[in-house]
Length: 251
Picture 1 (spheres, rainbow, N blue to C red):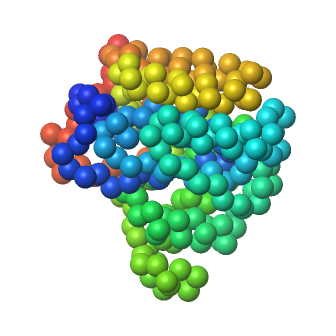
Picture 2: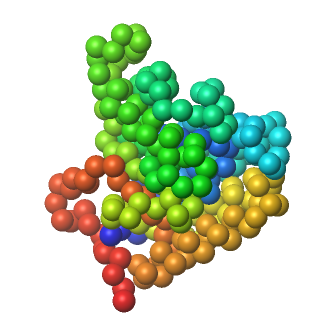
């Protein structure tokens, strides 16, 4: 189903929206996996911040310096801020309590309402699913006031954790997606420009076309131009059915 509304993306919300925090294992994951969602949210007045957990140093294409520069430019095009953190390094990530506590500290510092993380489906780059698990654990640990490593910062509970799929193969089969309408021309333009900024990666494969076709197929199914799927970690809670704008069944 779709929980979006017909509000124009360039209009600012009258109510201040709590920040959105997106985690990526590599410098391009967020943009390819859910960049259109970021563009829509920032243009609605929500602050967005990226936390990237490597510099793509194990990749075949592009140097770490180049990929960091691409990520900074891409985040700016989407209206987001960005920071890079060190965990185990590209292609060496392991699920560790210390990593979850470190990310929980970022959650307490940024205090987001919505968190986006890579899908837990083990496919493609192994860092993706591992980071998704670490973020899921961090969201729980951020709530615990007695965690000694984080006692200097107040606990924080997010509203919802959503997973995004960098590739079609990483889409969960056992979770009904929430479709975010990304049809507006200004959203598609910002998202496409952000993806194209990662030139070191798009020279190797046409990742931009892949993501746009995915969004187009989801959109056609829902009776709109383009949509991006997010997968909730927990059931969504609505105050009433009035919050459901429309369903995706168009065939």
